[in-house]
Amino acid sequence: MATIAENIQQVRQRIAGACAEAQRDVQSVTLLAVSKTFPADSVREAVHAGLHRYGENYVQEAVDKMQALADLRAQLEWHLIGPLQSNKTRVVAEHFDWVHSVDRLKIAERLSAQRPAHLPPLQLCLQVNISGEDSKSGLAPAEVPDVARQVAGLPHVKLRGLMAIPEPAGDLDARRRPHRALRELMESLNQEGLVLDTLSMGMSADLEAAILEGATVVRIGTALFGRR
Ligand SMILES: *Cc1c(COP(=O)(O)O)cnc(C)c1O
Image 1 (tube, protein in one colour):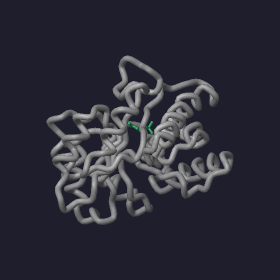
Image 2 (spheres, helix red, strand yellow):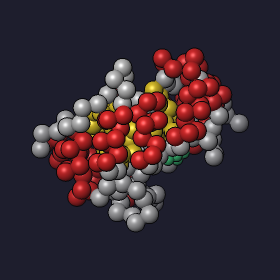
Image 3 (cartoon, helix red, strand yellow):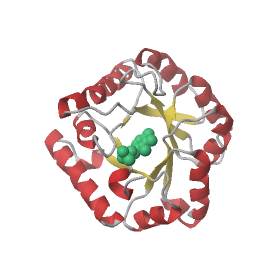
Image 4 (cartoon, helix red, strand yellow):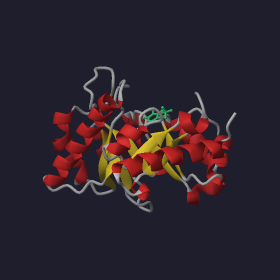
């Protein structure tokens, strides 16, 4: 079985290949390691192999890992990428650096109100249901401009961009379509005067399609840590 360090190298090669094809600077894509369901020791191994940004889906699991890795806190960035209920916003505001999965104004308002004063603003993305699936969480694209404007005005959070989890698609063209739609949505928000710089899209199976359409953060679990 490949080690985490070997997997990181492979993923970095895929990112570099996609950046070359897209004629993008490889530095313009951030690798977010999705460590959900893997133990703190796996994260520690990945940190030693050079990864410093981690995405988690479940708040309590993440906080437990943060505590186990408290000695590394200064060099780590923790991103919440899973669904967030109102009753968990305080612990998230107190512990995380980023939240990618904001899908309601109310959640952003609570995060802003509960962000401790000694911490920098919590960095946020709005999750968009870009493929229009009933089962997926996220704002409908038509709802995004209004919510984005209001979130951008909150004091202790910073709206950075958009996130999506498109449904799996067969060929590269089909995979690119939802990523393109998310990029175009962000571009239209920026034309209206918002200043967004983050497109959180692309996972183990579709990171190339996402990078070709402008992803700035790819969220990679399986290809780094193995099957869950
Ligand atoms: C689990 C998860 C990922 C990582 O998916 P892989 O296919 O394992 O790379 C990325 N984003 C979100 C929101 C996830 O829940």
